[in-house]
Image 1 (cartoon, one colour):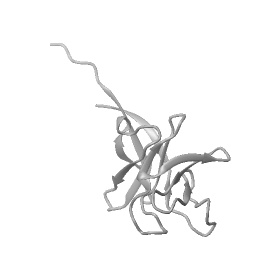
Image 2 (cartoon, rainbow, N blue to C red):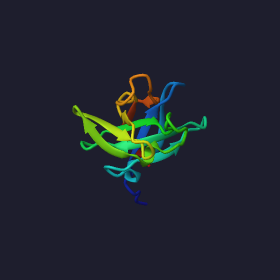
Image 3 (cartoon, rainbow, N blue to C red):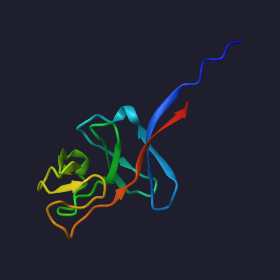
Image 4 (cartoon, rainbow, N blue to C red):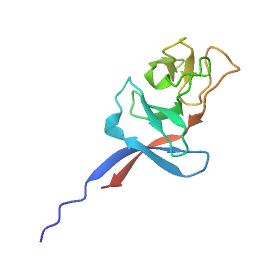
Length: 121
């Protein structure tokens, strides 16, 4: 009897406040330049992005200026070498690495450490 070789799957994982890494989605669901919304087990919505060089980013999906859960639909760009997403509603820009608003120093969204992990399937 022959066994099929184990298949490796690449997925995005984020570290939550509860600690540890939480699998969020298969890497194949992310496309450069577009975001994806995901729901964590505690009901938190996150916006996931794939950077130009292949790194994963995760920030809160709620736009703090409007209260709408839309940041995953925002436009990606960079300022000073730092990637950001611009809200599709009022266009405020949020740093993908730390969640800070580039247009208002007093506003930020949660930022989550993200990584791409390979797991056997």
